[in-house]
Length: 406
Image 1 (tube, helix red, strand yellow):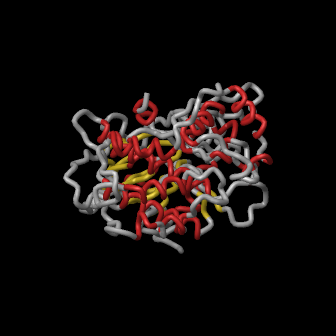
Image 2 (tube, one colour):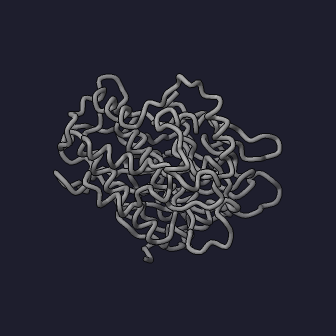
Image 3 (cartoon, helix red, strand yellow):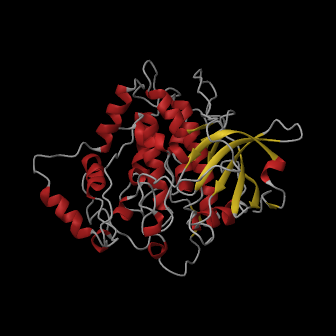
């Protein structure tokens, strides 16, 4: 399983020419670069800042950086972003990755612009196929991603889909403690599975499959399917019940029941769910996932029957299997790849742009503050998750992602 990633003793500026600045997050900044010595290949360099930078005493590096270094150098799959090398320099860590020109968030946003049309059905099938292939590899390697969302899924100009940002990922083989003890909040709020919202102390890779279902829905509708408002932590730093997010799910899916989800009543926040049910007006009825799906196909002018131009009823079957309340009944990555959505009709391509005439702009690269050696590293709080000084590593969300859906 060992990849080509390694730790270099050379300085970053000796090996790479920095082309520009891409984005920043809680833990550092990402730059676009080119190899020196006449290389035309492009790279993304993630610079992690020292932990608690600016204080007199240097305290080390973030847990997110340690996790990402430990995992990315061991993983090697076409649908997981490849780590080229790690450079340690001046109390900073630089992780060099292969470069991808796009991410799913950017692709979705492109289709929301005036005069744009829906994402082609065959492109959606290819994206999901490749995403599930990468996720199956991670799960078989005992790795949970724990922050799947469009902004963390890269797409190359050749149409290869690659899972990125392993800062919140972790091994789940025989954990010493329940996963909740290590990270009380995982997964950006709109993609967070119901068992996490209900306070589960023991969760499984099924949380990643719920996120895939949310991404599938977003590719179809060009909007997050469950766009809730996050409840912030109080002064006692206790994790609040995400009432609004749970309500958004219920508005479409209906209420979970103990008949369909036997372990529901054992969830720590089950009483809060009961309170939510009691406060909902009796006249208020959930839309229903099938009604939501049918409306989505109609509004985006997909044909109703399964074809190369529409996900059809097989698409709904896959979506409902991914957005299953009970994590034990939810489709696994392996089962999802065996679903008729993929196995009947036209087979999914390993190039999600195949047959598409859409021209997507490349990732924006800024020349402002692109000096990798001297740039300050402000910690921009990531929407959807509390600050990691309170609850552990927080998942990344680009500032543009926050603004996009407002």
